[in-house]
Length: 146
Length: 146
DNA sequence: ACAATTAATTGATATATGCAACTATTATTT
DNA sequence: AAATAATAGTTGCATATATCAATTAATTGT
Image 1 (cartoon, rainbow over the protein chains, first blue to last red):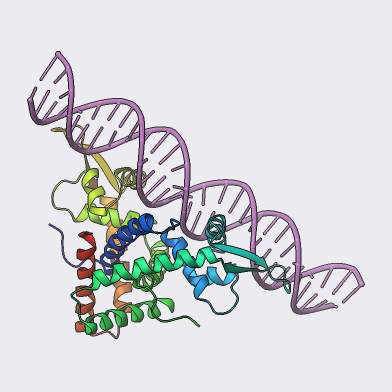
Image 2 (image 1 turned 90 degrees about the horizontal axis):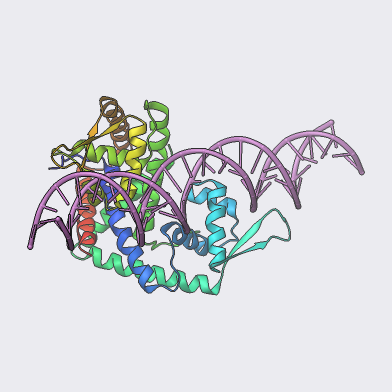
């Protein structure tokens, strides 16, 4: 039916697509606030950073245009998961602060994601998973240099 | 700086994002027609099928709404990469046919993708890659059942 | 012949993305 | 200090994608 030797992007893409489908469904059902994958990713990235975060940094980190980030933050702010706070030392900058509600929702989504991954990884050995991570990191780090 | 234990979706997502960034850049530079990742994926899926293909099948295969597929096919048709041909036996159906131009563009894009993957896989052993594919397929097939 | 089903389409709405132009603010240069 | 650069954010515009609900046209089942 289907030929073998699919390009790797498509193979991984199909896996991600299926994962996201289930993830979206579950977070839609179980979390207090519905987040898209992009919103979830950005919220998580902001939350993880230990230093103060501004939009420009997020744009670079996520590899997107600053206006794309701006608009996702708009919706995160509407949902009261994030606030913009002007840097008094440089009023061009907005610090991005995750609200309590944001932390709670993020925690819920992360829990759902980790549980899902637990389920999906059933039957794989630790060494298989280690290799998997190794390959992913290898490919990503090489792609970053291109 | 960044915590470890990122959810797997994000780790894979970052890899895909970097891959797609380079792929988009190269196909934009080298291919006769610019395709988005979605257009590329759909064109490839149509081309690979050995039986006649209709939109409904593609929607199922790609896990998307039929109207999403319809609109991507609209743009593929505008770019003259695909044609809709009415099934004379059941005139509700449109067979999706890849044009010569479509085949040429697809070939160009696939070549670019395979070459990119060659580069990115440099330094990985065959056994690492086999394990990688095994894990991907494992996760996808489990996700499909949820 | 009538009803149910099917494939495709359309319209409405939401999200995401990049580019270019613009504003406000800060930094640099002369 | 005044003029000029550079920076962070914002806005407008165009394109792409996605889902849902309603509609149309064609086919199938009763």
